[in-house]
Image (cartoon, rainbow, N blue to C red; front, side, top):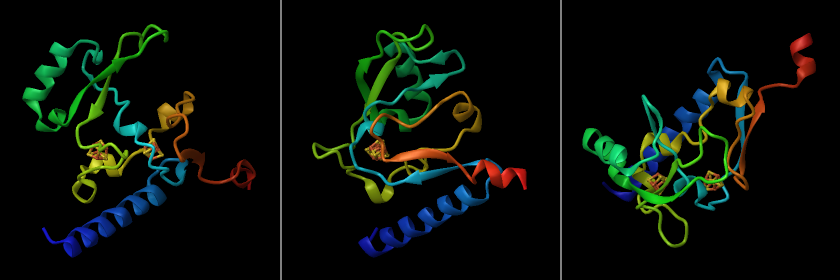
Length: 148
Ligand code: SF4
Ligand code: SF4
């Protein structure tokens, strides 16, 4: 793919995401900018029907079912956390380079472009973006606006 084509593709996908951000039924929007810290590509949790992945054998089975999991490798475990998260494996993407940049930025998967995606239930329970992430979830309008 030519660089020009990739830039157009990237531009169109960014428009789709901003439209989604604007018109989805959620009462939240994503504000801010990426600071390119790379944390969201190196502190990833995966889950299946049994909950968060805590053992590498389970993850290997997931890799057999979908190629996208082959992007990731084990990068530590969560410790000293509440029971549900204790022992959950953290994964890192092999496409993240030493400068915390994505090596396949223009063709990165859609779920990467969508980060941080809005999950109203997660936000209502106090869920937020990673520490130091430049993006934050915010209500789509001030509380007073809802009273009008
Ligand atoms: S493909 Fe790129 S943006 Fe997606 S997780 Fe990997 S390094 Fe991050
Ligand atoms: S954690 Fe946030 S600021 Fe850091 S790379 Fe990911 S999206 Fe950008």
